[in-house]
Every structure is written in structure tokens, then in C-alpha cells.
Amino acid sequence: MGSIKRRVMMLGGAMTPPNVPMDWSWRQLATEAYCGALETVGVRPREVDMACVAYNDRTIVDSSIGPQVADALALAPKPVLVTSSACAGNGVASWAAWNAIASGRCDVIVSLGFARSDNFDAMEAMNSEGNYCDYDYLMGLTHINYGALRDDYYRRKYGATLEDAARWVWQCHWYARRNPLAAEFSKPMPSLGELAADTPDAERSRQATNRGGVASAFVLCGEDVASRWTDRPAQFDVAYAYRPPYMGNFNNWPVDGLKGYDMAELSGLMVAAKEAYGLAGITAAAADVCQVHDLTAYEGFMAIEALGLAPLGKGAQYTRDGGMALGSACPVNTYGGGPAFGHGSVGSDFQAGVIENFNQLRGECGERQVVGAKVGVNSSYGTHHSLDVVGVLQRRW
Amino acid sequence: MSQEFPEAIVRLDTFSSAVWYRGKRGRYLIEGSKCGNCGELFFPPRAGLLCPACLERKMEPHRCAEGGVVVAQALDDMGFPAWGYGDDLPRHMVVVRLDDNVHVMGDVVDVGPGEEVAAGLRVRAVLRKHRREDTGAWAYGFRFVRDTKGEKGGS
Image 1 (tube, rainbow over the protein chains, first blue to last red):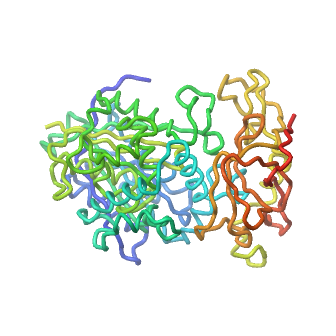
Image 2: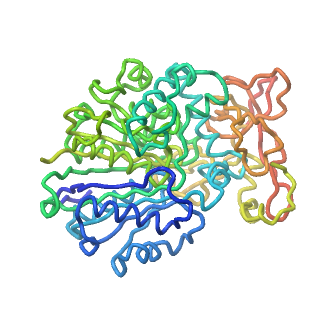
């Protein structure tokens, strides 16, 4: 690893609300989040040195997305770096932005993600695919199968129950009813009993809600220039790690950091958390608020374990003990999580957590505010945790 | 979703016969790789790739064990089946720890009424139809059936 020249600060961010207009193109969607973020923080378009972008849309030609985005955002001839790493792709984009700022090459970068998923029949486009392709997708294993197999393994290994999963999802819904950006914001609150039922409908309700088309963006800059736009910047650090994409290989993969774990642990997330915490100069105990990307409750348990909020296998116990709720040492998923904020894929799965934590640090979260939050941690993943990203935000005012 | 293959739209989402050809030994034989330097076993195969354990590039073909034990199972009944498998629902999806300790993903077929597929079930691989490739030909590959004899295989 090289040396870091300066800290990276987050100035603010923005994202599209649920139910964006059907007639918006992906270009409008991306521009809405981009301009929203710039307006929120008072940065003018000419002050942007670069955009780092992740996207998820099969109707856009993969090999030419960079110039298309540069054109749409009126950034050309400035560079747009495009990443392809599934739902946590924006975390990888922000990693690239972080490096360009920390090195001193750029002063201001917008990290952007967008997914106009309804440009294509999203269920067929995404859910029917596996991770590895040649030996899962081609043999009839889907994205949904991956999640269900991993959840089954976790439940049996650590004894988590439907009631535990329901409790996680219920808390996500509670926060979502207090977050206007959440997909479930204005919908009736489900009961714990409904969520804990052993039926296919209840099983679906314990999984993520689809947000449809979504875009989000946040603005990063060097610590030495942050005062041009704000006296309340937050220090941003980010790290990510990969695991082999074929889930059979989640078991004891012979590499330091991954060896000794199996499908019930997010070893890549542990690696990423260790580096992110190191960059930020914190430990897990310093976290005041935490957002995780959870397509199922069991993934939520695994995530808070890998982030160090709970010991391995004790994520359900953390939830049972009220660890997710306001008033605990580190409330979890105040944005509403996958079940109730909604799954926005590369459009929001990482950056929704970053933006929520930023707003928490600023004390702007209303009824879901964590009093006195100074450190926020968030995680996101792609391709069923063959990619895991961890972000850390700290108050610097 | 039907396993019939008449519509052009399906072809847009169907992998080429070249893709199926390249993976045939892995699908037919559960042929993975063995590192010629450190002996680590892999599936999917890593022919021509580096060994993540020792970083040498000496992969050799390894025919994985054909028998093993289910370590995770999930019934595919959520309504979003894989292309070409819609007539097989509900499918019993599994992760199997083979007898040589390689983990593979697949499904258990020939499950009779009242028979349960759960962790701990002993299974063995069989060669079965999967779905059609872009030429319309059937692609074959391994699937699993209950192994009542409990025999161990592999080389």
C-alpha cells in the first residue's frame, strides 16, 4: 500500500425518491442525483474534477458507458471512471474517488450510482442469473437461489429463527415509516406476527423491497479545500474486498482472511471492515450508527457480525436485545434497510447508507435521529458477498 | 416458463453453444482442478489459472467425487425460476460437500412425494438434461439424486 497525502471529506449527497417518473431516461435519472448532490452542497458543475460511476442497466452498451455518462452530465472532456461490481458498485466507485482525492490528483469528485432497472424486465434480467455464470447460471441456479441457500445454512449453523428474522425486518419498517425516501414510507406498518409467519408471502415480506429506478450521488473533496463549501464536512473512508463468486467456494477458501470461514460468515466484509476501520483510525466500538445492505434479515445478522457490532453467530441476539433500535449503543438500519427502504441495486445500495449516515452526523434525521452520532459505519455487497464494501464517516466539526 | 424453444426473444438470453462446449467436462464429469504444486482442489475448474493458495500456475484436471452430503438446501418456489427450468418447479436447490471436500451447487431431482431434501442427505451425481443451448440442442450436466447406498466415488 502507498502513502496517503490527505484526508477525504464528504460534503453531502442526494438521491432520487421512490417512484421516479416512468418517462425519465437513465440519463435524466443519473443527472437528477448528480445535480441534486451538487446543489445540496453548493458545488458548481465546473468545480467537479471527475465522476466515478457505477451503473446497472443492460440496455446501455457496456463498452461505451464512460463517454455516455460524461456527455449526459456535461462533464466532457473531464474523465468519468465506470466500475462494474454489481449492487455495491458505487462503493467501488467511491473507492476510486477516494484514491484520486487522497493522492492529490483531484480536489472534487462526485461518486454516482444509477439503475434504471425497469428499462429491462428486471426479474428475468437479474434474478435468473447466478454469480459465476458457467457453473451456476448455466446449470439453472439463480440469484434468489444463492440467497436462500446461504440463509438456510446460516439459520442451522447459528440457530436463528423466523421470529428473529421478523424482528429485524420489523425494525427496518419502523425506521422506514420515519424516512420519506424509503420505499415503504407511506405504507401500512406490518405486525411482528405477520412478518414471522411461515408462509411464502411472509417469506417474501422478510426479503428486500424493490425500489425500481433509482440514482444517488455524493460529493467528496480534499480536506484542505472542504472549507470552500462547508464548515461541517465528514471524513470519509472506504475499503472493499472480494471473495470467489461461486458460493461453493465460500467454504474455507485457501487465502488469508477467507480461510476458516464458510457460507454463514461474511469473510470479505471482515477484510474490508478491518481496512476501513484502519484508515479511519477507529474500532467497531466507536460506531454510533450503522447501515447495512440486507436483502434478507439473515444477511443483516451476518453483516453486523462481520462489522464487529456482534460476535459471529450473535446477530440475531443483538437484534433480540434491542441493538437495532434507537437508544442502543449502535442503532442499525435507520434508513430502513433492504426490506423497507428498498433494494436499489447499484443505484443506492451502498450510497443510501452513506447519505443516511451523513445526515445522522448532521442531526437531520428527525424521528429516527441517533442523538449525538459522531461515527457512522455502513456496508454493502454485490453478487451475494463475493464483493463487500465498508464505508466510515466521522464528524469533523 | 416452458422448456420449448421457439421464440427469438429467448435466444437473446441464451448462451451460445460455444459456452456450453467449453464447460462440458465440468458439467458432465464434475471435473475441477488440482494444483500440481500444493494439491489444493477446485471447482469450478481453474485450467490455466493461478492457484490462489500457492500462486503457482500448474493446474491439472481433477475429477471430483460423485457422492457427497447436502450442506444447504432451499426450495425454489419464489416464482422466479431460471430460464429453461420453469417446468421443473419446485426445484430442490442444494450445496453439496463432495467426498473429496469440494463444494458444488446444484439441485436434487427425482424427489418423490413425501421425500424430504434436507441438510445431511447423502446424494450422488447423475448426468441429466438441463436446458437448451442456442442451437436448440439439449445441454446436459450433473444433477443429484438421493444416494441410498451411501457409496463414495471420485478419483
